[in-house]
Image (cartoon, rainbow, N blue to C red):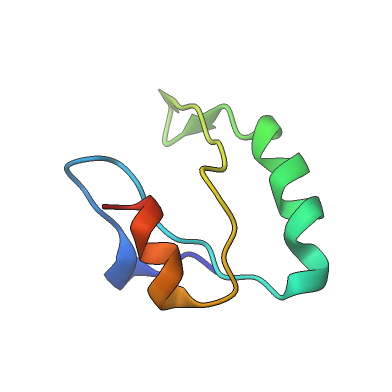
Length: 60
């Protein structure tokens, strides 16, 4: 689930929350996201964290 309150509109970075056993599958699936609302996009993982508080360092 994409956490809307953790989306940084300026830097175009956010946090996606998944259970620990789905992290690898999510990272692998990001490569298939090429367009959102007819806009070209590049989705990539900047890091993985066990808590939301620590994950915020990737969006700062």
